[in-house]
Length: 229
Length: 238
Image (cartoon, rainbow over all chains, first blue to last red):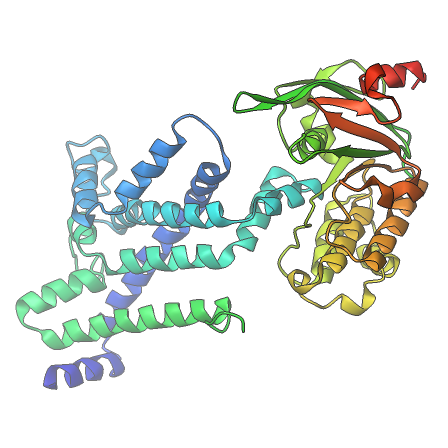
């Protein structure tokens, strides 16, 4: 109980270190998700609307990637970005860029799998109507995206929720460097291991609050949250 | 008014899972032509309309536009999408209000300079002014059909393809649809209608065609003298 009170005291006293960690977390995860959304939507759309050899195999592959542990992504990228790796000369390891790359790869399968489900459930007439009304392929694509925006928003929120709270890839690729690559999950892991529960709880509360805000927003844009009478 | 045009579709073939749906079907469509296509369920009416509209890929087809050289369906596809418009049996209403549906269409037609005026005009033409702010998906079947025709009016296609446009409509809805289709024909748009009940469209004075045994046949010819529509058209110098 005392730790929880300390946690809120830390948050509301304007502790710069805590807020810096929160800012890094949001910056890295927001950039990662913004970079992942365009390719994920295009891949999901092609998988849902296209008809080509190997389509089902690719869908199964992305569904399999859904359950890939964050540390495995972290380990793979660590090998690629480490000095002896193929991208070692770029000096990206233990930077925010490396963390963004890790979170990008983590969010991609979730976005693709969930967006694919939304596209698959969409009415094909939306695409055909847009085309027959004179829209080019790109405009028709955005029309379909708009038609299924709630499903896509749910996919984005699920992916954002996963990457902002993952610890494995961020720890391996960012290195948990204070004021630079320390984000909420790596800070929670560190502070808890040091016995500073208050800081851990404060950061955990921020994550919970974020999850609540994102879900409340989704429900707000989706409507009243019940079926029509 | 629509500029003069002439679309000749030849040797359209299509099969689904080893079953032949259309076999060497040909049709020629020009200004203000009106064709009423009938046929049993699954005969291939919708498939033919979707192929003509550039939506569904045929196994093979040759297309001549304005007496040019015969081209494959694939190379004509974008031209078909630009010039022909296909209306689903149950029109799809885009998310948002009825007005948004019309504004969406007006935005896509570069020939429309004053979009607001064009939308207003079409709202009046389709008698939809009172419903303009309603969610398009909440409209009745007849109202949605009128929205689809209003969108078509804004799109101003050379050929309008309608799949069972009066299905599930009451008499008033049918009459309104017929009046709107007559307006299309008057402006030079060709109208091709797939239907189970051609008697509804007798006022349009359309030419009856029938899909049977994967062929498109002229309805006025008895089965013993069945001709392909292209033969019929040749015989009449079309």
